[in-house]
Image (cartoon, rainbow, N blue to C red):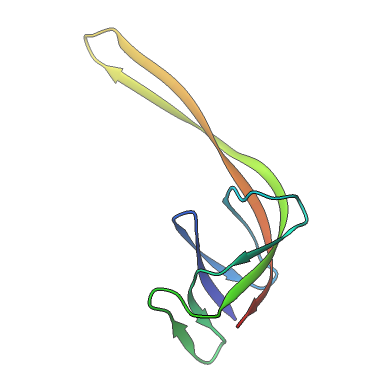
Length: 103
């Protein structure tokens, strides 16, 4: 049994018990998070596809940790103009554990 949910402009394939990093979710560690934008659901026998979302379907998860991703270096350079800019960026992420996929 698995589902595809949308969060932060990205799509994630989730199963019960799986742990994944998604874009930052406001909340306390240990709190309940509900993903209600379910695009696809498979119960092992049949696949249900929404248009664009499946009505009444939701995925419940627990917020485990707030953290930062790997550092990405952004370097801009224009030759022959003495132009160099170096910036870094670390995306804020939330680690969630999927508890239940339900209708």
